[in-house]
Length: 364
Image (cartoon, rainbow, N blue to C red):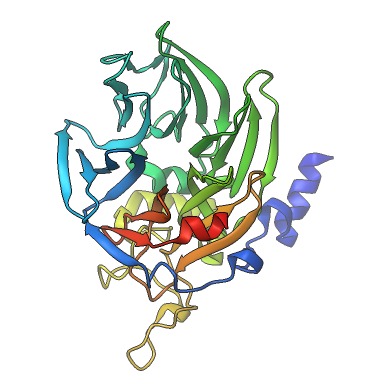
């Protein structure tokens, strides 16, 4: 009966074949808070924020940087590949590299490196977090593409992402969960239960590390979730690649058109989500994206967007911070608390933002 039901859903445009997109409403009601935030520093491809006692660590392409209190950027190291993930604990820094796995720098496991288990490679590390001083958890978005290929993986309807458990002392790598549609973020809860963002299925799931049991905790999101950062009040900060729109949802269901687009059109001009917009007149657009009287409406359908959501300990949204269609703080793929402030990396805008006092306000 399921094939017949699937055929009927496709004909009627419902279920998995629906092209409708949830609206930003309730705690996700649009605002301009990211646009109004202070620009703390400028950094091309700003990504991977981690708060430490010595300042904020971040990546910019192949460079590992430290953000000083005044906004100055100090270069710590430069590597041969782009940095795709960062995590710190007890003097250790875990660094994920595009196509090259994970390396531990400093601390008890200094110099340890991990490239995968058997034929499964850690070539697309998207997020890292320490479960304890001897255990590292990692997400990979794809088994065949690097982290920079996130748009291609979406448009190819990929589902080869995974969650990995790495024993740093024994130097072993174990796959906890596979078959995920671009696992992009991971966070611990103080127990064997972890949260993982699954971008292309627009949801956050909970996984039990002991049993492998999975459940939905936040689903039907109107945007593509990225990394998850802890909040002091046992809650979380959930960042996003971009917003969804009906045209992309429609193309994802039109296989022949989509395959021709991937084969014949340069990637920057695909009808697909992006980290920024308006860099070229060749970019695709819908009618509502056209400027009227020289003004782009903030509510226009857009390829790129800026969004960070504060969630409680059960991943229920409490409040949100936006950069809308007419904004420049798009591609907010990483965020972290630092003292009383919320620090956000706008990769699309190539800048680091500070929302002063926001972290303490959310706790208060």
